[in-house]
Image 1: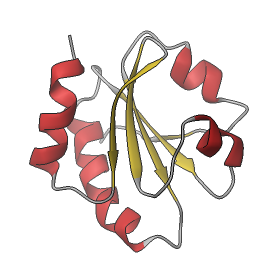
Image 2: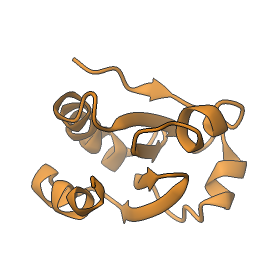
Image 3: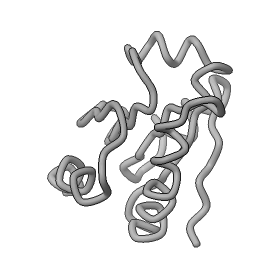
Length: 108
């Protein structure tokens, strides 16, 4: 099973922006029910994309500067970042197949 890295404001630059792989960033919170529904989907994607896409999780409550910087208005919000640039954004729960359809075009 692929590891999902917990990132914060101090580690975001090195773990997300300076990595050579695309990164799926999961903004969530422990109290958020849709986030809990999305967790197993994100875990599956991390396993399926292991070696191709880095998957990280950010606690929105503990990292307000990142929430503001990336304009996260609701959680869960998933950002697909490649080369330090946001390529795709999905907010709210979505089934795995729909998430893949959003993110797959940005793999190459």
